[in-house]
Amino acid sequence: MDWNVISKSIPLYWDAMLLTLKIGWIGVALATLIGLVSAVIIHFRIPVLSVIFKIYIEIFRNTPLLIQLFFLYFALPKIGIKISAEVCGWLGLGLLGGSYMSEAFRSGIEAIDIVQRESALSLGMTDFQVMIHIVLPQALSYSTPAFVANIIFLLKETSVFSAISLMDLMFRAKDLIGLYYNTAEYLALLVVFYLIILLPVSVLGTVLERRLRYASFGT
Amino acid sequence: MQALGLDVLFKGSNLLRLLGGLGKALEISLIAVALSLILGVLFGVLMTFRNPVIRALSRIYLEIVRIMPQMVLLFLVFFGTTRVFGWDLNAEAASVIVFAFWGTAEMGDLVRGAIISVPKHQYESAFALGMTKSQTYFTIIIPQAIRQLIPLSINLITRMIKTTSLVMMIGVVEVLKVSQQIIEANRMTSPNAAFGIYLTVFVLYFIACWPFSILAKHLERKWSN
Image (cartoon, rainbow over all chains, first blue to last red; front, side, top):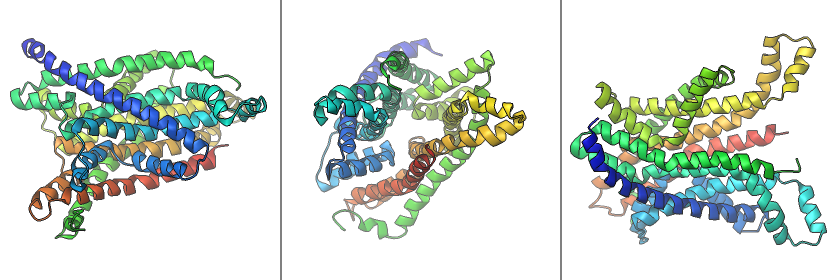
């Protein structure tokens, strides 16, 4: 290990990590939004929309992110839709994640006892109120393990962004290895920086799961 | 057709080359899947033991696999081992190692989950009926655990197939690499080839994974009580 090399390249990795974090978390936020909306729409069996969302989920769950990104970034410009690499990154991540999040939230919603819904309805709440005040809060606590697992999965998936020439951690590592051949140092830094991104999420997720388990009742 | 660049597919043996590339990716994933299923079952059974050393080691292994992106693992094995140990692994061997390493951990976790999900009273009732330990396991516990395990492991297989698309990044000539070659070769004659080719690859991957997903969903629904 050459510590000089390491200390010199830390700032480069830091910038790359910020980009990875930025795109990663925008993607996660988009995925959560898409997931929630589509889970609710599919749950209520809203005509047309629920079919569209079901098709979307099947397509994005069964294709790799790398291919989705290639399609967004290299293929769409040919039919006149130009999207910048960064937007492609979080859009792709959000679309992929949305399909996974939707499944996670839906299983949470389905886990809520029908009694809860019926009691709320008999108290005169509307369908929408029941969803917002009764079903979703409980469903979210049920879906937490899957939700956290999906966040980790999505943040890990950011490593393919280098394929569409985003200067993320992977890109930086590959670039530096090619330039200076200090493979061991650059790979070690790569591992350390991914740990910085993912370890807090993993630890927080475990804590959150333990806390929220108390929230689920009625079983 | 021309404008969408689909015509390139039917030039020469382009479609066959694409399918060959997909074959390469599937080959790597199938070898890795086979290894992971076998090693994963062993690892899963190992994880149910109460030995603290085994527990700690398997916990560390699981956490590493869960936190490190597969791409980083690929780089570590492909570039790292050459540098540190002087091994000359080819890219395909490196990818099989990485995906089997990853798949074993995931499979092991599924197996562990399936085993401990069988309620304790099932064991106790079987023993109370005078069954021996091996009878209990083979006729009572394992059939129930397998019902839970199979849909989940089919899902894992589709995930592994999808993840093998990464091997292109360490230079395996699979479907994406072939696509790039075809697109480059036809740059002048059909500038829109990128659309047609990448659309085809998208559809090919979907066709490779979708049947598995449907099967998993079907089995899950059929066996859930």
